[in-house]
Image 1 (cartoon, rainbow, N blue to C red):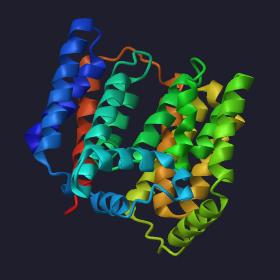
Image 2: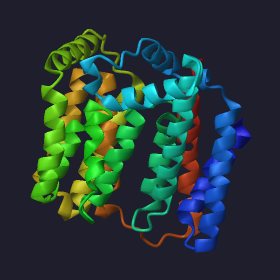
Image 3: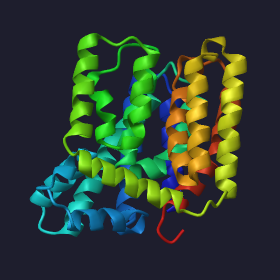
Length: 322
């Protein structure tokens, strides 16, 4: 398995580094092939959160009005159940569908030539294992927030990207911030907030119960203050300071607000802080400030090779027996 992991990481590095169109096509095929073999190498129940998704599909009630709360899980899960004869096969179908979307996203990310290769490789090393193999809901929300983060300073984001709260409610603040960051057409604003109104008004009782249950679960969780969470917090704070000092365009209330959201979430709960921090991190790494610059290939390769240890650590951390 270590060999497969190495091939996946190395193929992605060269995909992110190459400028040749022919090499891009060949390396894309190589990366998808290696990723597919890695996906086939480990059973679906070998990754964390599998039990939670199978339990959700086993008790799925599409007739309940509460399906409007994060409806993506109900739509995709329900469709998987209709296409298969068992919950296990439905979960497997969902995993395969998500694997395809995640693979396409990371290929898209690697081919963005206006992003620093260090930003691209860090996102890949740190998040590819969980986004692709574990987080069937939050993973897609992360992908949508990344697309919003990337398109925000460059062009008007596609309206479909603003539907991220229907995938995972944790993305809601970032959709709102996206509107504040860039002037959006009034028609898009009306359409999106009409959908969000339906999300919050129709199943209002379910929303309240859902919010209370989530608050209870996280507020009752013992604060671990793990070494990993501490290092992640220090890393993000360092990122805020670095970007604020190096890039004058990022010395705005918008990015200060992002930092405040992360710190507030971290004080509330470690897990919530990590999830929100991941979304905050995407805004910083995918901003215009991360444009490519000329660095010798040897230096770039050495730095990205060090990031490979993060990739290995994160992948094995996603396994059930980790």
